[in-house]
Amino acid sequence: EVQLVESGGGLVQAGESLRLSCAASGFAFDDYVIGWFRQAPGKEREGVSCISRSDGSTYYADSVKGRFTISSDNTKKTVYLQMNSLKAEDTAVYYCAAPDGHLCSDYAAMYDYWGQGTQVTVSS
Image (cartoon, rainbow, N blue to C red):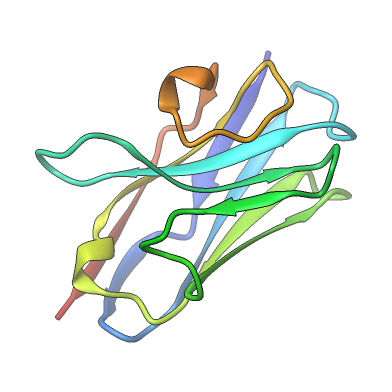
């Protein structure tokens, strides 16, 4: 059974940093895609970042480019999202997700497995 568990959310002030973790289990971690999404109240879930082990590619939404960095520790089967220079508009519940396929996408419907989410709140 595929399981994804996020951690690392919290309350910070604008300009500060947080690092989110997504611990994965139940699937081979030698060829994976993990995406990060976020959903703010009253808004649709949006793709934030994605990493593909098969070709090493990464993806970032324009709104987070230059501020967020996705990385992985394959020995720990964990994907991280380092979030710097946080803004109030980054406030949301952040989810990690994995598809059965092997391509990064910012389209939530392409993902089959989801974590429970972790709250990030940035005060201005």
